[in-house]
Image (cartoon, rainbow, N blue to C red; front, top):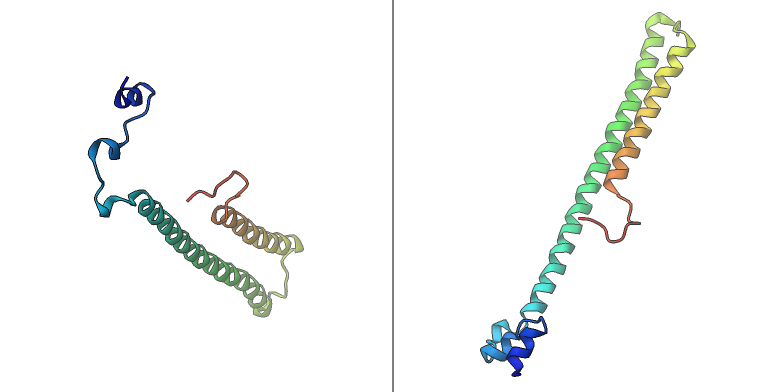
Length: 125
């Protein structure tokens, strides 16, 4: 058998360089250029994703801090308005506990989705 027939029989496609002649200079390192471009694009995507995650994290911290501050201010204003904390202690405990649980829950959920587990192999983009 000839080389071209044996290459096709063995399941491989013929080497384009062998049948097409010399490869132009600008196409000689095309695979390496494509691989380098893929690496560059993945790095740029990772940098953009990191910036977006940082922005989300900063805003979440600000919003949740403001929410906790507002809950505390409402209690202080309520006390100074002459009510003298005549609320049952259970109401105050539930309100503060709900605020803390909401903050912890939001932070936990957002953190879980911003920083997924990397145990499953390569990070997904």
